[in-house]
Amino acid sequence: MKPEVLLVGDSHTIALEDGAKELGIATEVFRCGGAGWHDGKFGFNADGIVPKNTPMGRRSIDGIRERQGVTNILTLGVPVITTIGFHLGMLVRGLRWTGHHVVSEVEPMPEEGLVASEAFLTAYVQHHRTQHIRVLKRMAREADVLVVPPPPIGIDINGHKAREILIRLMRKGGLTVFDPMVELFADEPGFPSRFVKDDPNHATADYGKVVMTALRERQII
Amino acid sequence: MTSGDNPYKHIAPRGFWRSAVAEPGLFGFSDLWTSAWDLPADAIFATFGSCFAQHISRALMTRKMNWLNAEPAPGRTPPEIARSFNYGVFSARTGNIYTAAQLLIWARLAAGHIGPEAVELWTDEKGHVHDLLRPKIEPEGFVSEIEARASVLSTARAFKRCITEADVFVFTLGLTEGWINSRTGQSYSICPGTGVGTFDPEVHVFKNYTYPEILRDLELALELMWEMNPDLKVLLTVSPVPLVATASGDHVLVATQYSKSVLRAVAGDVARAHAAVDYFPSYEIIASPPTRGTFFEPNMRGIAAQGVDLVMGHFFKGLNLTLPAHGRTTSDSAAREAADKKAAEEELVCEEMILERFNEA
Image (cartoon, rainbow over all chains, first blue to last red; front, side):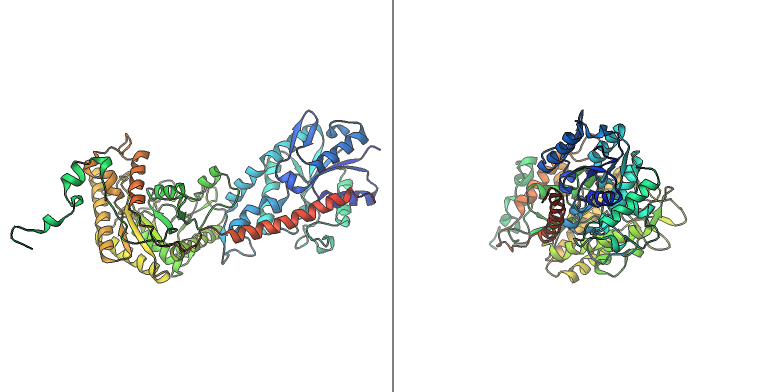
């Protein structure tokens, strides 16, 4: 069965997949672990986006190719919703090693640790996500790509700021980003706890349903 | 002392110009400096001061000695980004500390006698904020005054760690000339208007610190540092790098010689006055007449790598690291382990979630 949407990304695509299922939206999902995405174990060639040295990713993409009869999964002719590039816990892990944190409204003058400036974090994020943004831009030449940043849960202040910076960098790079925190939850003080799974780093299927509903209403999918 | 005897008959060859300088030649100087202290084999060094102090930082790192980096770049920072944000240059991100007056400000910040609000800020036309104690610490400045002050406070904490955790605090005196705010007394790292800040002749005043003023500021800074760590040893050096420019009205060569002479005299006297202070002659190795300016680059200002190597060779040769290692380390591996553990737990959750998707049972 031809899908209506192709989901590409990490474990955060699960909520979107489950939400789509509840809405009766057919999906295909190319998914591998956030660590693999973070470590750049993927590339882009004539076959579109491809995993590198990740058995999980290989298994996932081979399944889609077999079911859909394509080599390049981006040629399915359906919108691509992706969480690639985030994996924020891993992205900002280096700051935790040294006790760095960015300044926040909650804690404008930290009493311990080291302060990393927003300019520094921007340069840092840009360096570690150059490959991701480049591949996303190449994907966007072959399909309608929509980046849906995972909700900011289970991450520290550095992760929150890195998420904000990454969204800015992606938009600056010409990518279309649908940030549920702005589009759907702007009136909430933070990500609604009713949508947080027990694990507690991921969102629920209900959250996925809310996102997919919004995308459908806005005729993005 | 017998008849015909005199004190010079008992002086070692290093005390005579012919045997110590003229005959051995530039590369044959020996016993130029011997550390005043016996240090533990794993002695911890912190380095600050004018730009020449960076060479000492680098040499200590190259030799894999215990160089304290109390404000390192976050993990996984590529070297070019670390460099552009001035990480790893000195033991904390103070930027160049050119004068004793600036050292005193950092000591007061570290001791909590003044807060980050005491440091003057300047906002450029793009809205970026710069702190005038470290005007070039961030390539584009800070996003807000709050961030700028938080960063000063963070560096002050790191600077304090350098005082409380180091065995030896190496400080290179660079300049006597500086600029101050006539209303607040703020000492500037560089003249406002030269890249950062806006020069206001009503407010910004040239100051050529005199011997008594430098001696006073240095003594006050050391007093504060010893209050925080009574065991701290201080190694003073004087940068051999000449002034880029002088605002004194003198010829820059004359101004340079004045500056370096005053700094050298202060360093010598402070070292003589305190058992916990020593002087290392980097200035003499590069800039004294017997070197014939050999180690200056063609602009007669920059120092060639060979000169730095020679300086550091004497430094390491003169160090006395004979005491048993104290076993203290300069790296905070606990924070890294905790961060890795948390990340590993998060990764495990993510991987398990994905793998469960393949479970068709």
